[in-house]
Length: 195
Image 1 (spheres, helix red, strand yellow):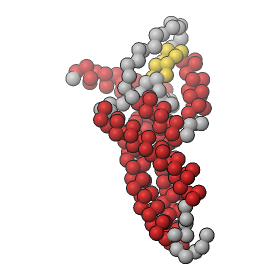
Image 2 (tube, one colour):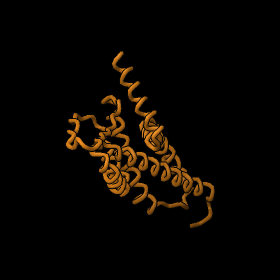
Image 3 (cartoon, one colour):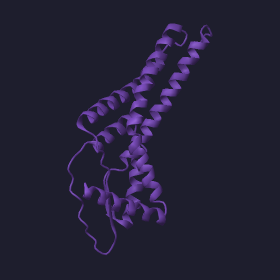
Image 4 (spheres, one colour):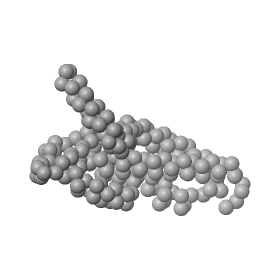
């Protein structure tokens, strides 16, 4: 690599690094949300189910995480699981997002496009890129800046669900927090009943 245009080459490398980090953040958020897909069973089996789900989803690529998230986030009617063991506490958890069809369609299209762009960047574009060309580096930085805005839009779109998930995890961490969560759920149901 020549040093004819180190400033533009460095800017291109910084933009590549920034986008790859943001793609990784997006992948991490999607994996965390996919893990929240409806989960039900006797209390004694839930830890094993969660561990298996974490193990499975941790292997997902961004493309697979996108596919699974879109499957999980698409509204569909599912019957509540039937309690089979009356002698053990039974827990059922599901995540429902209040997303209108238009927003969900836009979200789907953006995520699918980003997964493809990430693969092109990592597997095709960089291997053949001429980092010695100032013009190509400037064009790449401009493309990556636009791409980064689209990644950030999706991270912003997912942020409320991720924050809710983190809050749920915090509340479930201690008996006092669990009581706080159950009280909060009871208040929410009472508020909805009054509406």
